[in-house]
Length: 110
Length: 111
Image (cartoon, rainbow over all chains, first blue to last red; front, top):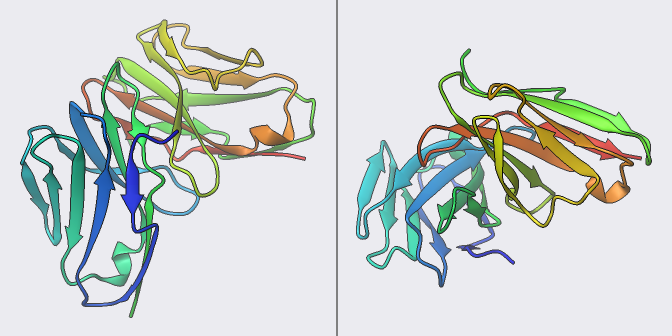
C-alpha cells in the first residue's frame, strides 16, 4: 500500500508550458523529498521540505509543503525537454525509511 | 566521483541461482538503505543500516534475502534461490540526516 498518492500519473506537454504535480497522503510526514529519476538510473534528490507551509524554489521549479504536512506540490514554469523524467515524492513518517509515491512521468516535447 | 556507487549495474541470472550486489555509500554517511523498484512503481524499502547494525527490515525482505554491512562502510545484498518475481531494480541509498542520496541501481533480470 502506497502512503503517498501522486497525480497525474502521466503528463505530456510542449516546451514552454507550465505544470503542477501533486503528492497527497492521509498521513503526516516529518519531512518530504522530491526526486527526479531518468530511465535506468537512481532517483536524484531535488529538494527536502520540512516545515508546514514551506515553499522552496529551485530555478524554474517551485515546491510547496502543505500546512498539515500531509501533501505537497511541484510546479514547473516554462518546461523544457530536459525536465523530462519521473518525478517522485517520498516522505518519512516513522523511522528512517522513505515511503515513495508511484511517481509522475513527465514528457516535454520541443 | 564521491556519490553512491553500485555494482554490478546489470545482472542476468537463471531462476534458482544466487546473486550478490554491492553498494559503496558516500564515505561520511553512517546510514545505508536498500530499496527495490519494479516497473511503474516507486522504490519500496527493504532494509536499513546505521553503521554496521541492521536496524530495520521490511516484510518484503523474505528469508531468501540477506544484507550485510560488515565494517559500517560498503554493504552487500544477497538473494538466494532467485525467482522471476525478484526481477527489479535494486537501489542503494546513504545519508547522515533525513536526505537520502541514491546510487544508480542494479537491474536484476531472472530468467
